[in-house]
Length: 155
Image 1: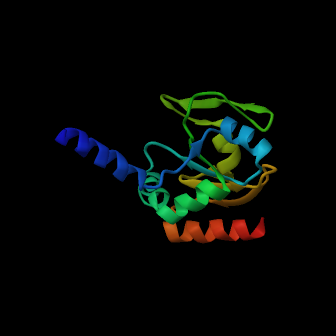
Image 2: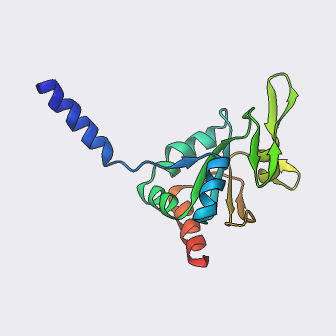
């Protein structure tokens, strides 16, 4: 009985923590047909320390999570993913560049700025898939929240 109460308490406690709803490109595109919203796309890699810092701070902030969940489709995208992705009526593929390295065409298409791709990159696309904002650096929770609220006010 005591173990059951502890398990129930743990499950109820976890419900109080906000969870960020993450979508694939395909899911977000389908959802946006019925309910158009801007996309927030977080382009990262597994080896990028600033990407990890954003994942563990910026995207754990409760107010940021609330705004992302309510007003945007959030896509977390590994720029080195090897699977094909269909988005905006086009198929994007992984492009190998050497021994165990490469970049996904979609990451390159979205994150390239002045001929280079930097990590992390945060993209905001409007509901028509037009780039509203591209930021190639670490963003803390306060900065991201200000950006999100600015985008919401424009909509």
